[in-house]
Length: 395
Image 1: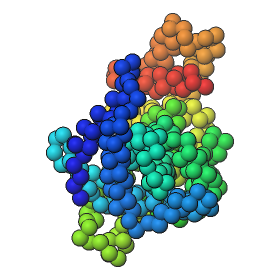
Image 2: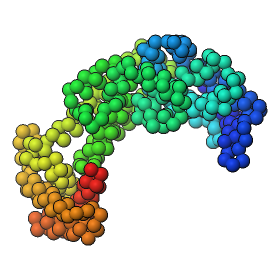
Image 3: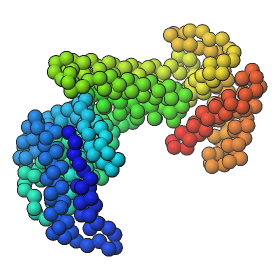
Image 4: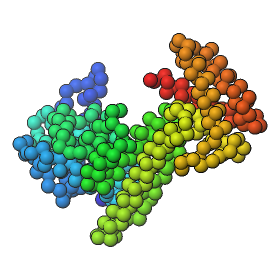
């Protein structure tokens, strides 16, 4: 499918001049006419993408919200799982994009035209209802993908209310609204995930929550979070690489089964990352360290391995590797930070912070870490110290 949006875009630019600051004027009849034509072209494109969907739940204002949710959920799953590529003509020629990208960009263009022509009364009730339907589907897709903040600014109040109303009736919403009070590593959270029956949507949510959790973890333990971030990106990259091989020519039961297997493998790996993160976060207890001390322990062990020098002896206890010398040093580093943090407004006192770093450097040298002087190793340890300071500042 190749759509030439250059002419449409130029018309839209002309129509959108009505919002141009001090020199703006009310939209002329020509502006409205151009916007209406553009809106209807975009609407037809969107209808063709969802030709096999029953869109009636959004055409009836009295429709049961549960039916609306069912449509949103199925439409979002279709967008996520599709391996179809669509060609879009632009300034630099034709380019191929995923169905998800194509759909969201088309909705955005349709909405721009809708905002101009809808107040004129030129549109029929069904056209307006379908526009709201596609904006609602786009809002649902963005919410699953973790970009609901963008959608909140673009969807009009009526569509936002419709999405909100529909989402009240599903377990997906409770998973997405996870706050600090809820532990995403808990059995209850996994139970909520298992209630989501659509595999592509489940994977989208899982990846979104993993990104959020890794970002939070990096505030305390930068080195461990970096490891899990790499694991997640590799999982996502492999997932997309395998999906590239599912072409339209292979459509049918074979492709459907292959797609299910790809989703299953990616979801299992994402869940494994979540499990390993949980084990890593809980391992400080087995080590006999605090959660914060464990962050310094991890960086000391990681740098030792990265720069290949000897420091202490590793032993396996309760399924985890323990290095008593690194444990002791991690406690000393954290103790220095605790002493300096006892000063009032210590984070804003540059003299105190400079002394902190000097004290930690002296501590490392006195304890023979590393055996041979290495500015690189010192700097890497200081990165974790600065990361910890930043985290403390946000508490």
